Image 1 (tube, one colour):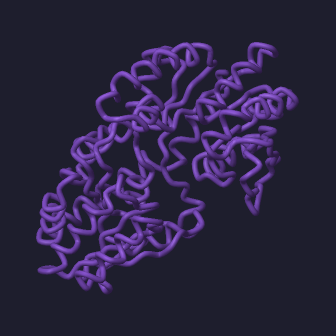
Image 2 (cartoon, helix red, strand yellow; image 1 turned 90 degrees about the horizontal axis):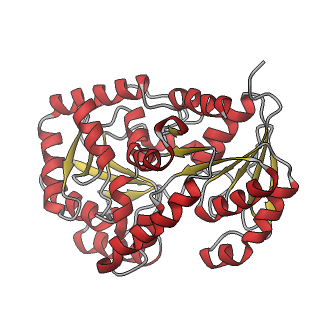
Amino acid sequence: MSPLSGLRIVQATTSHPANDDRIFFKEARSLVRAGADLTLLCSDVTKPPADLHGMRYQTYPGGGTLRRRLITRRHLESALAEGQYDVIHCHEPDGLLAALNVKRKTGVKVIFDSHEMWGATLAQRFPPWSWNMVSTGYQWLEAGWIAKCDRVIGASWAISDYLASILGRERVATILNVPVTDVFAPPVGKSWEDPIIFCHDGHLGFDRGLKTMADAIRQVSATHPAQFKIVGDVFGEERNWLTAFIDEYHLQDVIARTGWLPYEQVGDALAPCHIGLIALQNLPNNVVTSSNKVFNYMLYGMPFIAPTFRLAKQKLVAEEHCGLLADSADPATYAAAMRWMIENKSETQAMAERALNASRTKYRWEHMEPILFDLYARI
């Protein structure tokens, strides 16, 4: 019998959608398959997934926007207390505070799953001159909360290092946001004939390098057969900017958007692409997090171009030799890296093979699931 059989777990979230890829498609589905009695507890502004895969779905009045979360946390706390769970698995700082209050009263076990470096995320809401002060102050508070957790999870190597400095390495697990291969279509062989298709996975805004990518592909496509596919979408002011940019430089046949896709369809859209792009701008939280898109690229045998300052990408380039680093604030630097990959196709294809091999052996959910199970078994 699985050590998780009958364990009453609640996955509690205040800002993520019910069908979040990490929370729902990865962690919650795995825990249910292992025999856990799992409840997905979400804000009442969310909609339930079409298929709950054997878990319960419950909402509370609150969550959603930051302001609403601050004044409705007591509703989440009440829902957590009434559920009489064995383990509360929470994903945001306000959810952690609610969980720790319930723990103090009932003794429930608490796991905090840190997707972000929250001090850095908070700091980005303030002027740059205050970033270090805000982040340091928040981390001083957060250290007290983390110390009361039974286990914590880091979504990147750097986040886990930070958490281990508070709680000790033995109570921290690193669970990367890698793809689920029973949801994403399996990789297939692809042609490396022209045009070479560069892609970006997910929402693409200015802070994620929209201007850098658009200008880089403009430069590259002037001399090389290349296209840029946004597997996701661009919204608001940023969409208006992109539309005007495409019109100004006549890039209608070069830049394309798929529109926002259900998680299950993302893999099919990525599969034909050749090279993945990441151009996050140099903001505090972006240094230490590890975006899921790089692992999605690797699943489909795509080498990547990523910012020089990203710690996780530095590690992947150094250890797996499956990508290049460039200055994400400089379109010319990205264009140079893109041209190099096109003009040195044999080396780029070797990177692609290494990316695919690393995905097979290290960076798929099947490699993270045992870490999650071990964390729960030890709690």
